[in-house]
Length: 212
Image 1 (cartoon, rainbow, N blue to C red):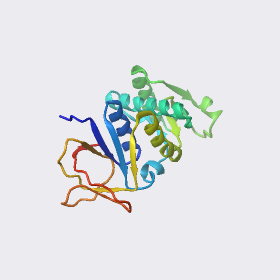
Image 2 (cartoon, rainbow, N blue to C red):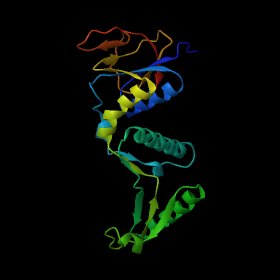
Image 3 (tube, rainbow, N blue to C red):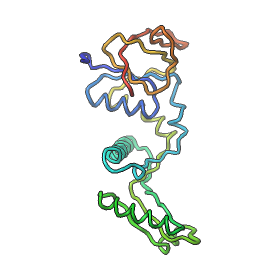
């Protein structure tokens, strides 16, 4: 059992930041360590779409909607841009249209904010040559990943007292202490335990590992 309620998160990408936030809200004193001076990986290069419609009903869809709510809460707190544009899924063939109708029936039964749109409705907004219709989902949101990854660490530090150590690479954590390490980035493996390596002097710290 963890006694000191402290945790280390390896990687300051979106997964690492989300993990740090969740741990902090659970009462942990959290330190995030990243090998770069700022987030520069896949979290910055992705297309910035919150996409609940792609998840099946149940736990995964509820988790996606909860994730969207967290995004909006943080964005509203710090003035981060987002746009709830929704998504439109179109059909040009009868089998595609049948699938969209079936999805609409299932999604509506589950309480999702979706609607079927005829080609006339879509014509007003898009090129719809040969279009039969589409399914509109209101849950999708776009964000700017570069802006988000630049400001969310400051938000976590200011509001949740999450500490950040930048420019330090970590290799294989040694299972020694009660402090959990949540690994949210790739680690270089060796047999000598966890090492913090950077141009600055730092203290190695052995910890117990958990999946991030």
